[in-house]
Amino acid sequence: MARVDDIMKLLQAQLKLVLPAYTQAPGSNSGNPTLTLSQSATPTAGQENAFIQLQMKTYSGFPTISLASSVDGRPDVLQIVVEADATTAARSVWTEIDWALFAHEAMAMNVEIELYIRANGSVPVLTDITSGNLVGRVLADPRHPNVGM
View (cartoon, rainbow, N blue to C red):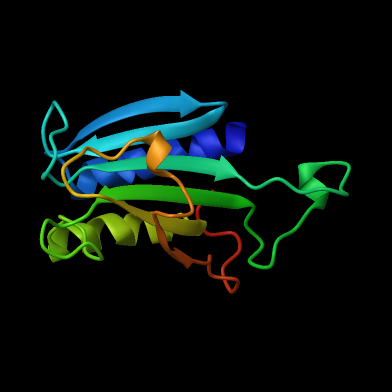
């Protein structure tokens, strides 16, 4: 799991540069690195919060991960959960500029990204990573398989 740990550390460092006032709380879930990102020291509903998990894809039929390959050449999935806006469930509470800064850094890791939006009124957490909350995926750029880690 060292690879995903390194990618998460790089993402944390980059987010600290572009969103310096945000609080970062790293963690782990079954060996997958996680990060809670918040506008304040204590995440509160209605703020620009995100729960992030970086998960290594698993493959069957391969003796080792190094022999496996995915369509995009990157075996990692960055799962991001944000809170829905109070008036439009398909939109996040994040402002456009802050989301652009965050998304740019996530995409720079060149991993597959899954975006989940949870109901308004609660801080995003691990259990919000469900198929019902999944709103979209962004694949890594196959032209730059060595970008990121």
